Length: 90
Image 1 (cartoon, rainbow, N blue to C red):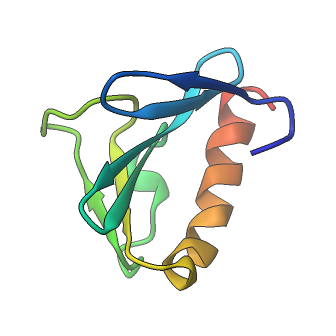
Image 2: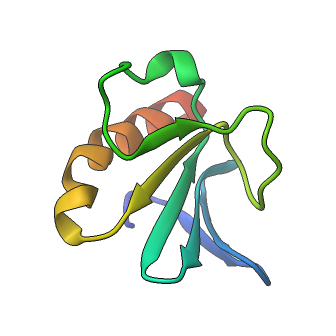
């Protein structure tokens, strides 16, 4: 991940953190789920592969989930990872 992040491996997921987790990654079948430490209100309504998980139990950090099935799906998520990084104190 770079830019001063620490990798924390957990039993069910992997977390990237600065002073606190900014993104957690979970492998589900052929997909990767990224949970970002952002508020759902920070994500535009027309954003693809996204859902609000505020009231859904999950491992890791964050109320925003992106499901990635390919490298192409990751491209638009990079900006949100950077946003989470900046909000936590990057």
